[in-house]
Image 1 (cartoon, rainbow, N blue to C red):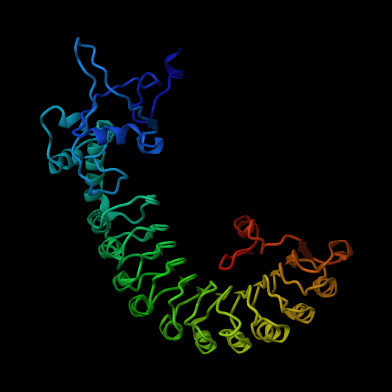
Image 2: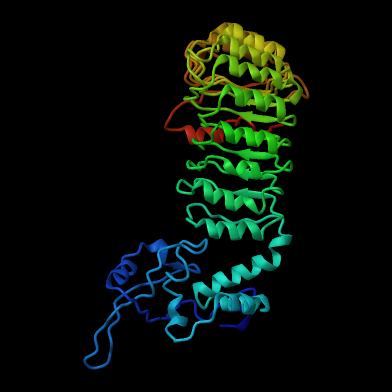
Length: 462
C-alpha cells in the first residue's frame, strides 16, 4: 500500500495495525471480584473506543493453574469516571510491577508533556488518563470559559465534584441533569467554586436536589432550568430571588413545592425575567390568589408564560387566568389542559396582549367556537395550537382561515386542529395564508415527536 494511503492520526499516535491484539494479565485479590469483572456489561469494558475481553488466565507452565485475581476492593468512588482508577481493569499494569508512582507526581509529569506524549501517557492506564485530565484542569481551569463535558449518568462523590468546581472558577455554562442519585451536598460542592460566574445552569431531572446551593449563585446567572426537580422548596426559591436578581429565564416545571409567596417574590425581585414556565398537574400549594401575582410582572417585560397543566379545576379559576391580561408585552402563552380556559376568558387575554404570536390551547375541553372566532383580531398571531380541544368545529376554523387573507409580505399563520371536531375535507384554504395542521399533539404516544415537530413554548421563530 502506498505510504500516503496508510491510516494515520493527527498526532501520529495511531497504531500501524487496526486490529489491537494486546493482552494483559490482571491479578485480583478476591475471587468474587474476578467474577464481577468477568461478568461486567459490555459498556463498562469500553476503553478508547475498544472493548476489552475478560477471560480466565491459563498458565502454559506445567502444573500451573489459571487464577484471575484483582486489585484492592476500594468501593468509594474517587473521581468522575464510572469506575475509579483503582477499579479499572487497565490500571493494574503499574501496580503489578511493584512500584507505583504517586498521583501528585503523575500530575506533575503530565503538566510538562507535549500533546503527543500526553496522548501516549493516557493510553497507558486509566490512572494515567485521570492524572492527565487533572493536570489539564489545574493549568487551564482558571482560564476556561466553556467546557463541553457530558457527565449524564456518571456517579461521582462530592469530593470529586468539589475538585471539578474549584478548578473551573470562570465557567459560564453548566449542565448536570437527570442525576437521580446526586445529593444536595454534591450540588453544593459542584457549584461552590464556580457559582458566581455561571450564566446558564441546566439541572433538569435532579430529583434529590433541594436547592440549598442556590445561595451560591450570582447576579450573572441568566438562565436556570429546574424541570422535574421535585424537592425544590420555598426556601430555595427565596435564596434564588435574593442572589440571582439578573435571571432572565426560569423554568420550574413540575416543581410542586412552589407556593403563592414564591410567585409573589419572583414577580417583585426578578426584574429582568423574560421567560417563565410553570407546567405540571400537582401544584397543590398554588391558588388563584397566588397566580394573580403574575399580573405584577408587567414591569418585568415578561415575553413567555406557560401554565400548562397547572393547578386543578378548584384551585385555578377564570379569575386567575384573566390576571394574565395585564401582561401586555406577552408574546408566547401556553394554557393547555386548563379547565378554566373558556371563550370569554381567552378573548379578554388575547385582546389585552396584542403582541401574542404563539398561543397553545391544547386539550382545553371547555373552549368553544366563539373564542377561536375572536382570535381573528390578533393580527400578530403566527401559531395557534387547538389540538385536543373537542368543542372546536369547522365553523370557527373556517372563520379563522378567512381572517388572514393572502397579502404580499405577510408571513403564514399555522393553526393545529388535530383531535378537534373539525373535518379536513370541508375546509377551504383558498386565498388565505393560513396553514392547517391536522396533527394531534396531545397524544401520549407521540408527545416527544410532537414537541419536536410543533413550535415549543419559549422558542423564538421568525
